[in-house]
Every structure is written in C-alpha cells, then in structure tokens.
View 1 (cartoon, one colour):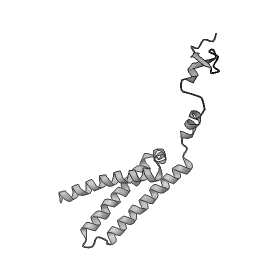
View 2 (cartoon, helix red, strand yellow):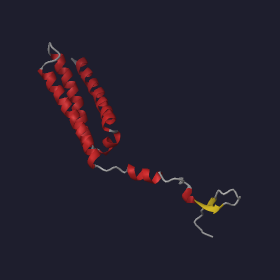
View 3 (cartoon, helix red, strand yellow):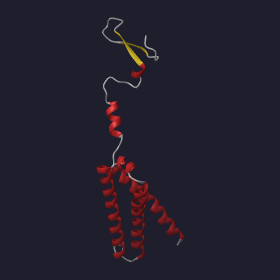
View 4 (tube, helix red, strand yellow):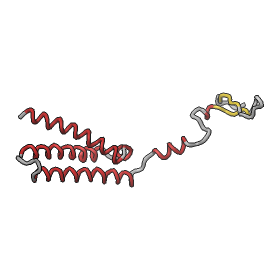
Length: 139
C-alpha cells in the first residue's frame, strides 16, 4: 500500500507542474504574475488533487470509467475553467506596468547613456554631431 501512496504523491507533483505550465501557456504568464498567490494555490493545487482522486477512483473499481471517476474529472474541469476565468479577470481588470516601460524604450535615437552625453555639433564637417561627456557643469 505504501508504493501506491508514493505513486499518488508523485502523480500529484507531476500534475501540479503540468497544471501551472498549462495555465501559463494558455492564460499567459503576465496574467498569472498579476494574480494573487492564494487564487493560484487553490485553483492549481485543487486541479492537481482532482487528477489524483480521479486516478484513485479509476484504480479502485473494476471499470476505469465509473461514477466517482467522472465526478472527479468534472471537478477538475470546473477548476480548470476557474483558472481560465481568473486569467480573464486579470486580463480585463488588473493593470500591468509593462506598457509604460515599452513606451519609454520606444523613443527613436535614445540610448541608455544618451542622457550622459551632450551634442557638440559637427566638429569634423561630416554632418554628424559629436558628443562629449556631461559632467553636470555647463560651460
């Protein structure tokens, strides 16, 4: 009996990984990052637990597809639909700070170090501005 328990624990851990990988791929990792931890815990662990209980129900009877197996598969599908609804809620109502960062980085001609350089004009006559370091003291 202890080998069967070890198998169920292993299946739970694998199902937990599978649920969160599926959730991040289908629902989007950015929405999953915005979601509160307790929602992810309840829905993810609940879906993995339902997988294990469905397997245990299938193993305990002569026929794999019985009433208890279908009940736990239904609970698992309901929890996965809850995962989708939670991702949709985060998509619609929770704000992300990614949009602000993308607008700042989309400025053409700006480099991270351009704030430290001051244009000096085309000193070599080639039409391209030359830059000198900005030391905080304007001459």
